[in-house]
Length: 149
Image 1: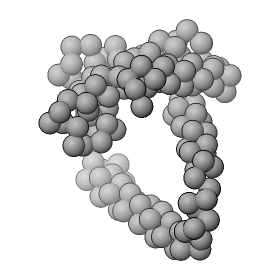
Image 2: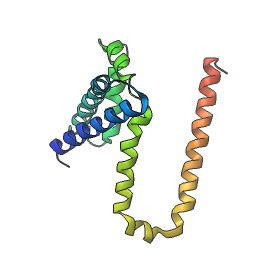
Image 3: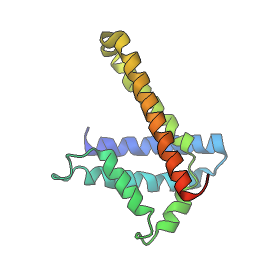
Image 4: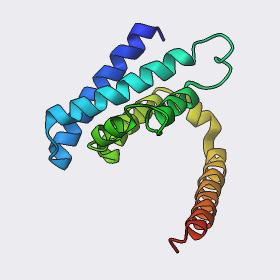
């Protein structure tokens, strides 16, 4: 996908998320757009970092996550401003267009899923179960370590 197409899609999804955030969670549309513009900027920066020749061996999501972590950490001068603005966005408003896109992507490859047939079911169950169990173990250790539980 070309860079301009990626940026256009990020902006389009941000507008959809802002609408979902406004309708579903009663947050002002301007505040939602402001928060999502910061998230889009973080995504674009991470996307371009992932295009650097030596760094392109890792997935773009890693670089977006690194940029987001740096932008919200105390080493970034405006981290309090970034966190306070992006806190206005509901996670479910973000998930809605992402899940819709995933559904469209899966529907496109329906012939591939037919060829996999029943074998995808035990693999999916193993992946989901393993993810849940290890996330629960990590959460239990972390919460116990922090003294929350």
